[in-house]
Length: 89
Image 1 (cartoon, one colour):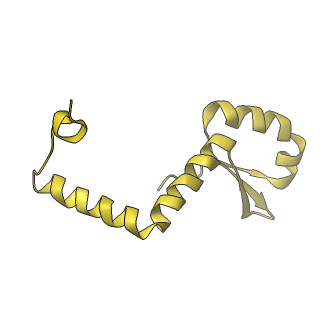
Image 2 (cartoon, rainbow, N blue to C red):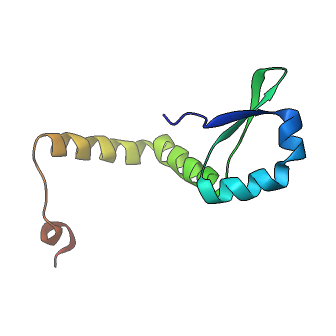
């Protein structure tokens, strides 16, 4: 699991919010925000959030997860298909 790249205080986040938003959009970094020295929130780009939301949707779908587990077992057993077998080209 990806860790938080760095932590800043709530005060620093408030003072630098516009700069943080611009920075995160370009770097994909994840910034933790602390309040009284304790992690209280996380700031990340919209793209990173969308990726996390899509991953959660996949993990929450039992049929998709069953197919993924089956595919992983088949790959581990060496039961791989060629592009032609999959796509018919």
